[in-house]
Amino acid sequence: MDSTVQTVQEVGSQVSQYKQMFENYLPDITKFGIKVVLAIVAFWVGSTVIKWIVKFVRKSLTKSRLDTGVAQFMSSLVKILLLFNISTSFGVKESSLAALLGTAGVTLGLALQGGLSNLAGGMMLLLFKPFQVGDYIIVNGQDGSEGTVSKIEICYTTLLSIDNKHIVIPN
Image 1 (cartoon, rainbow, N blue to C red):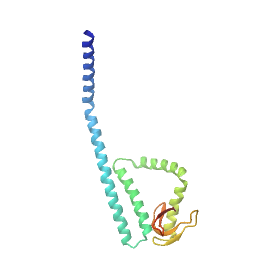
Image 2: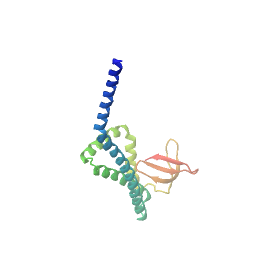
Image 3: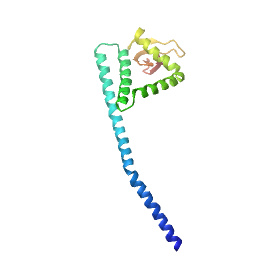
Image 4: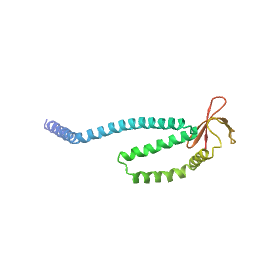
């Protein structure tokens, strides 16, 4: 009987310790929960605003009779720049972000050498304009793809084939 009373007292003591610990950390847990909710809301609002701005930029560039491929490329660039500006406005230091981007760039550059050549190819396509959106082209390659150019983006060009299939070709 004595050991049962002692066990109950030990359990009661442990429960009160856990209760005290929970009460001590409750404000921190609440602050963390509020930060998580605010981060989710900021992400949702930010992504909505970015989509709206990119859509506005694309329409403005299209109305200015700029080449459609250039408009698509510029809207992709605006999206990346907006993400950079938003992250710095939330307290991320530019030097930290630049160091992170530099390190990630070297790592990804080595891993994705073909992707970087696609980026350079996309720039060259926009500068020299061997074809434009709406042109019908035949790509001399392994599969001999052909179709009407529907999009020229940073790394890829999308063709619409005769049988209405989207063909994505690296630049």
